[in-house]
Image 1: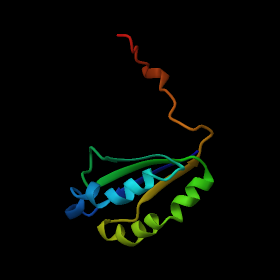
Image 2 (image 1 turned 90 degrees about the vertical axis):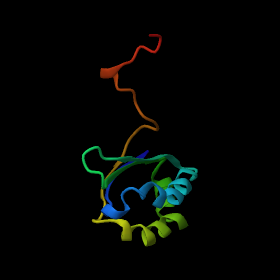
Image 3 (image 1 turned 180 degrees about the horizontal axis):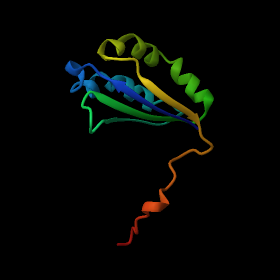
Image 4 (image 1 turned 90 degrees about the horizontal axis):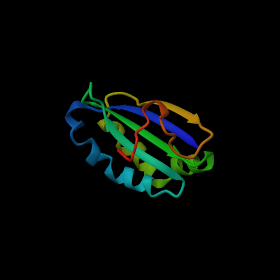
Length: 110
């Protein structure tokens, strides 16, 4: 899978509205057949920073995502809400889902 994490520095006046601003883009991306997940989180330390964790089935699915109409629309509309260019980590990972964190195993019968 293609695993991507990106940090978005949002303009302070748009930080509270960021989930609403990105709602259509998020829904359209999650509906892509090759999208495994597309999840936003907000930094606990910086209320203007959002972190996007996303994964696509493979390179072909990732390419389809960046060639989609909703991605092009996001390229056109989202930058005006940003304080800086997003930073990204993009990796090809040889798995297709999250792994369990064995060091914090939870006994589900308890």
